[in-house]
Image (tube, rainbow, N blue to C red; front, side):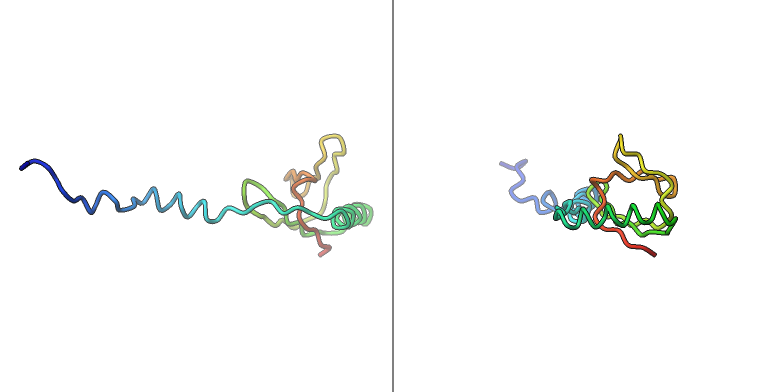
Length: 101
């Protein structure tokens, strides 16, 4: 049994690709579920911001992460259910929080 390797300690080590994948999965977040009153509050703030041309700060969910964008709402598309802010589409179902700036 001369050619047989009994122990291979380096075959169990993680590669850089494995570590990157683990770190990427660790940073993922789940989309929070909003209560009905929070949805109504977001709706009221959006209506008032459009009416008075106010700047807003929106926290939204996209691709397993939370993002924040600040600006003036340019357009509301009720058919496709999104708002346009700084030329970025944010779908209503992905909005987590909104504040007036």
